[in-house]
Length: 438
Ligand code: SF4
Ligand code: SF4
Image 1 (cartoon, rainbow, N blue to C red):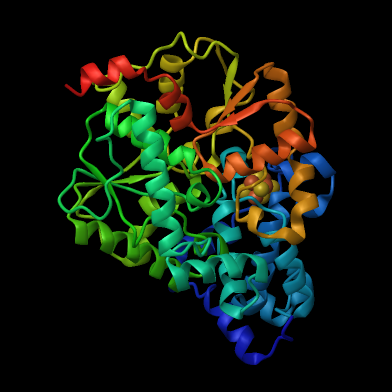
Image 2 (cartoon, rainbow, N blue to C red; image 1 turned 45 degrees about the horizontal axis):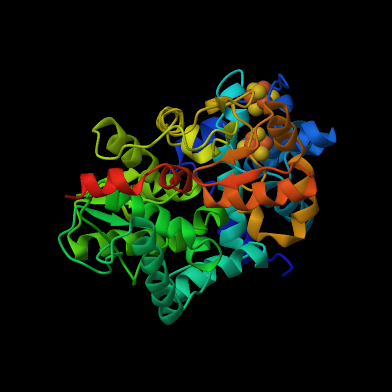
């Protein structure tokens, strides 16, 4: 770690400049130390380690603010527990703000006075990012996206080969040699995105979504130049890098003149592209931005696709991605879809906006140095799944799917992990689609 110096301190403190962010200052000064947030956080619940209490994470940033921006903190720091921005507090901030927070926002929902703890954590991460202290593991994912256009550095050739292969899968699945996965086509209704984990590890989820578009007779395209729905600079909290990534997807949708940008199954991708991107790029989208979950629900409601509920009879449960339910307000559509696609749907407890994170949020899946911690906080999710008695776990987020797959092995759950598109595609019968596509 680079030792702190005056220039680094200046860059970090700039984030706390009250003239720029009055919301932050309000939330830094509001905690009444009631302790209610402690039992909402999976890090504290699974360890009983007081360092992990959400209010303690707020206090780290708040103590620095008091030391440099309040009269009493500057003159008598000991009286207000004000702290200098030095190597010790930076090490604590890295460990707690990057390494012990999935940015799930569950604590915010339960805070007695509405302190936006997650926002303060993001701002603390932003201080670290501006000072050059993003963990190398997370930064290398951001770097791959900045340098290659996708966070897994998949080459153009590998990507187009995978799409060709998936197009053949689609043709077999739909029994139609003319079924296509369109690339770089102008003037379509939908520009669809992907989580790079799909072409890299789960290509069948691409053909699953293509099958849904085929069945709905959608006018759509993928782009070979910009398909990555993720924005890991949202997790590192580096605004300039987040802006560069957000701008690319905006530019590609604009260039292809698509009417709707449809965000693939990725919780933070939805948050970053739908809600944060207009702030990053400082303009509104002139096109519609919608999630794949919402568009699938739309197709079912409008009768454009007709899932057959008799095919999946195993008990099925749903893991809600935090960024989709708590932070993006998509709560009912995934339930509506599953109730139309499977015979036996059961909720986890708690669920929806009160759901627990799987443990893979906040960029944790990229930060291998915290792997043991990430899998130990997942004990809560494993127990939730076990209690449902379900043999299929669905989640509309590829990051969650990755973490759930690791939980499945670590906690010996013996369940099948599926994306929502895979479930829906499995329930679309060829004869129904052929009738629909006449
Ligand atoms: S956002 Fe989630 S992980 Fe972070 S402190 Fe709050 S409850 Fe804990
Ligand atoms: S619940 Fe809110 S007010 Fe209470 S300790 Fe936690 S952050 Fe502070």
